[in-house]
Image: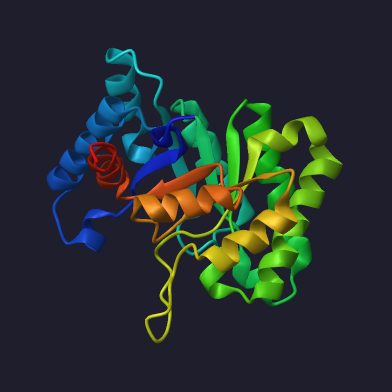
Amino acid sequence: MELAQYLDTTYLKKPSQANISEEETRANVIKLVEDAIEFNFKLVMIRANYISLAKEMINKANSTVQVGTVIGFHEGTYSLAEKLKEAQDAIDLGVDDLDFVINYKAFKKGNTNLVVEEIIKGTAIGLKNNKIVKWIIEVAALSNEQIASISSLIKNLVIENFGIDNAKNVFVKSSTGFYKTKDDKPNGATFEAIKIMSDNARPLKVKAAGGVKTKNDVLKMITLGVERIGTSSAKEIIEETKIDLKY
């Protein structure tokens, strides 16, 4: 598979987070989609209010680029009802991938029942509508033991409730990229965390997101079993690859 097909090119900042206007944000999304079409990236990961715009651009270009959005972003503490409504609204707009932020704070507090219910119902609404479902676990907020435990929990619930054949349509995803860490520690995917996820989530797939910025990072992630990579540096990664191929 070509490298571009591993990449979910991503722009998720709200205007207030980027300190820019709505018009500038829309322009950034348009550029993201244009680049995705040009470089044949797997998917554009954007906020739900831009799904229709992205779909229109992709269809007009007769492109195979998919469109994904985030649910319960970025804190993960939205109620289940709110997450399911967000998911249904995105489905109605024609989204292809639903990336749910799991309630990792509830998980850390031992409120497993809440997490179990949202995994089952969130996965159900996605699979029922033939969507890819990804569960963002926010590795920077978890210990290695918790990363292993929550990855295993997602895997077991998906297989028990939806069968092994549906496992290929569900991912465990590392990070939102928005988590605030202390002491400048990584807030996204690390090789250590990805290996733990991969070891404990299989046969579910793994998506690395947050902090993946170079071709070497991408290649290392792929060797660890990652099948999708979320990055705001997708264009730069492919351009780096093209430069390397000239030598």
